[in-house]
Image 1 (cartoon, rainbow over the protein chains, first blue to last red):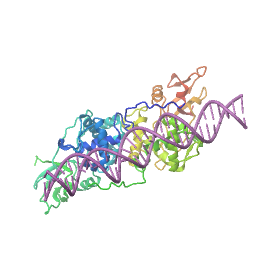
Image 2 (cartoon, rainbow over the protein chains, first blue to last red):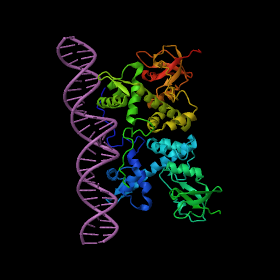
Image 3 (cartoon, rainbow over the protein chains, first blue to last red):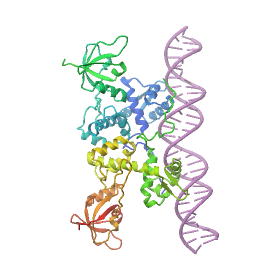
Image 4 (cartoon, chains in turn green, red, brown, cyan):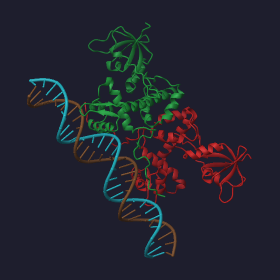
Length: 240
Length: 240
DNA sequence: TGCAACTTTTAGCCCGGACTAAGAATCATG
DNA sequence: CATGATTCTTAGTCCGGGCTAAAAGTTGCA
């Protein structure tokens, strides 16, 4: 035997494994860039490095390579921004992540706070077919269990940026709409407090000297630190 | 910020991602070695290379590294054999693969012939927790949909090597017990013929000159080539 | 406006895991 | 039992994607 072993795809991604994907590292960078790229402002190397737990030098290298692949626009020393094709790729990964999270919670009994890490790995290995089958099985939900919108299979995403609980004035009554899924510990604590999407919360008088907020949840008075209240997105309760 | 970025696990596998796993490449090698290592005979570099679609040189390198990690015993120029710990690791991956295949078919509507590739990727990304949840959801099946036994979570595997359909004499009546899951095309064709685990098959007079076998399946006479009949494992039908 | 402090990039290295080319061991056969 | 064919290993390269150390660019402030 011993054929010349000519690898058939000289140009494609061999690490990707999912169908038509980028390498795992590339996918992680795109997701992180999109996450940080709020309101069109370019993302700095260092913030990206912090987000990804990489050194700034590593980030510069990868960013250069992303720029060569046309996935981002990079203005050296002035940050990076997703291109149209990078945005498409990022949305595809975000869809995977959110569909997988939803499925794991709905169908396999995962808890709200432990699902993130698993999805983080599966999103790079799952094929489009698997993701679509999961979405199908769940009836194509529009929101994931943390309240984040799931991009459509065609890459459409309707973002509705709700304000943070931490910004709500004393006396407001609000409904929790979305909770960032990234921090396991904080999520676990929020779950203990009963702060899920859909929960009604009343904002009480804060504790003095930049202390924690005080809120009423399900009749109970609770206090929660500001960096906890920051990851909770809420909507004013109009029926109130 | 910019902490020194001291990677916390200097000694562990960073590519693995699953919990307590080896790198994807290592897992693939272990699986392949076990697959080829029938009856204690050591596995040659070249057969492993063929199985994995790698060059023999690459295989030698990796085998050396596996030997250093204590996963295999390597007698240079005389082949390789799994050590006890390599065997354990291999069984763990095989369990993952078979549980995942079972789940995809049972719960997500995958077809018998398309499931292999998906499982091949997920087995490296799924955590033990996910695999156990899938097994749980399915009621801890003993066999996967191709009829292959699923190792237990503790790594026990009861192998029952049934003879190949291709070896059955004319006139035998047998029940299909297991079909190799590796070849998508052949699986698809077997499905068309109706040769699933559990199917009763009568072996008829073969066509002359090393021609295909002739069999009766569900009342229909069919012929199938010998390399197709080779991947079908059968049991003599005693109730006949 | 000029310099110190910070951020970003470059340069050079490492590791895993492929590959090719070439040398060493084994086997098969006269 | 020698020698050619076959198989396996060594040597050296490459690529992705990390890292550190050092250079370069940007910025804030006197």
